[in-house]
Image (cartoon, rainbow, N blue to C red; front, side):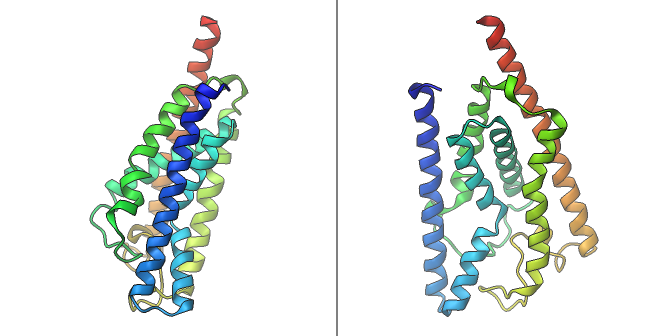
Length: 220
């Protein structure tokens, strides 16, 4: 990896980090302005880290700074799922973190520009020969979402929503059993749908990386 190919990834990673820091600072500010006590502010911070969007953005930073094809493919798939989900399933829903400033909203940066950056990064990748098998990379990509799903459903009923009177908190309404038709059955259905979409994306992205790497090898 030459400096010419490294610096765009570094700049993108720094941009994501800055956005994350601004979003976190703004979330804390909103919580404090709402008159929440220290415990509730801490809960709001933990809630922010509990969004899959946040975790996906962190994974994107890691993927942009390392050479692991598996991590880069997984992170790209996470960002695409998060982006599509945000603008389709979640568009127009009330922000469970309270009102945040538009210029620190992850939805305007991490869910629009970052997926594009991740796709370009994969398109330019030349490490297809070192990519894990299809089954292995799919299994690896599903670990984080699976752990997050279990964590979310276990923690949700145990914490109070800091910006409302609800005695529970879930990062997205589409996985909140109190709001989804069918309760937990509906939530499981949503997880399965998103999981299938993630698997398809991972397989497609891996195929692109392998194809591009083979083309580069033949050209060389």
